[in-house]
Image (cartoon, rainbow, N blue to C red; front, side, top):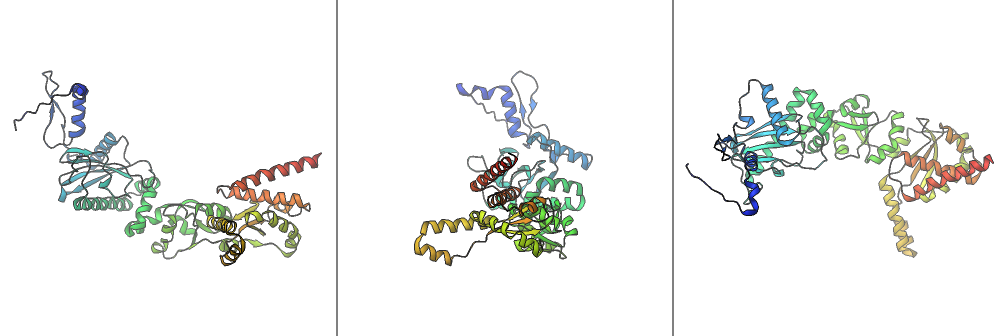
Length: 445
């Protein structure tokens, strides 16, 4: 007490001692200091308080609502956004207090925000990622702690057992907030899950308590649209799940028309979480969707129709052999869908690997290895006999036109699957369109 420290700036650093700059920096770094700090601009007037009030979580408020509004206002002042909610963080053992502000907008999975950490009231870092676990990317925190150790450069926190224990304890506070919100504030829970469902899914994969509590309420992409698993399980006691987004998009319309309940399991965490649904809803069963399950719901055509279409189907198979694609005729809903292309990414990759191996090895050894290697599953183009375009196509008796129509149907089905087209498929779509147009012009002339 009574000490005076005088700093003299270098000639090239005068900007840092301008009164407005010094006052701003003092407030930025020292607003939470326990002892009063006063700024005197040298004009002889009364000094301005740098930290006129205690930290917002240490103040007294007339009502809980007033406290919540004050904490939210402080979070907006510090971070620049209005929090979806604020979470009190209090760890007396290490002298830690602060708040976590729930972000109002979703963030990419794995992107970690920096947190504002003070040590004994002095701002240490605004980018302290290490204070929370990776899955907690839906909050940003302002913390003040007594016992955390700064690094020698005083720019971050020293990774030790104390920091690890604090990280675990803060994670428990966030879990407790999720549990409390789920039990007492369904509106807030709904807004939170709508925004941060990916963060909750990443937590639920490793946290059985959160899984039991929130899995039924998490949104998924299904054949009934975006729905929670609880809603979906009410109408589908057997839930089928695809292994990829591509597979889901291939089968969604057909599966929905057939009354199958399919969930898109291609997004991060989704397939693993859906398979755990029976732990929460024992009356529901979950299985992976395989092509056999879907094709079992496609009705065969009668024998006369099959025989009448045999010549066309043979030409179509020959035209599409370059894509390792078989062709079949079935009836299924919706009738507006002319064709369904069943093909998985893994099967395409396996066929590509096999082709490259044959081309590189060649000769006798290539033939032997080709026989020993398990044959990759072929793609299937299933034509819909209920569709007027298909009914017309199978009656075509002109070989070249029949081949062109089969290529066009394949191209349309490939585009409807919404998977990336290979160069050969893009070329086929363009060529078949031009050939059909040329045929129409010849016919008109």
